[in-house]
Amino acid sequence: MVATGHRDRMRTLESSIDALVASGTVTYEEAVLHTAHPEDIKRPHVPVGRN
Image (cartoon, rainbow, N blue to C red):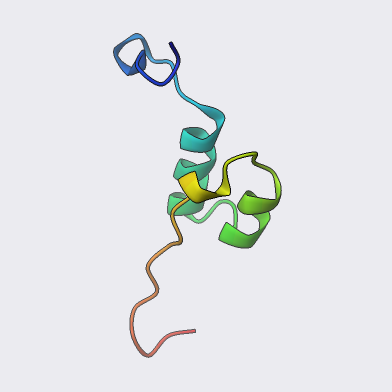
C-alpha cells in the first residue's frame, strides 16, 4: 500500500532515504547501512573530475 500510495503522500523508508542522499544531507555509504533494501538507494552522480 505504501509503495502505491504516493498520491496520499505515503513514502517508503527507502524513498525518504534516497531523497536525503540526493539532497546531500546523508551520504550514500551511510544510507545503505540503514536500509533493508540498499538496491533502492541511488548512488549520487559525481561530475567527472571531482572526487
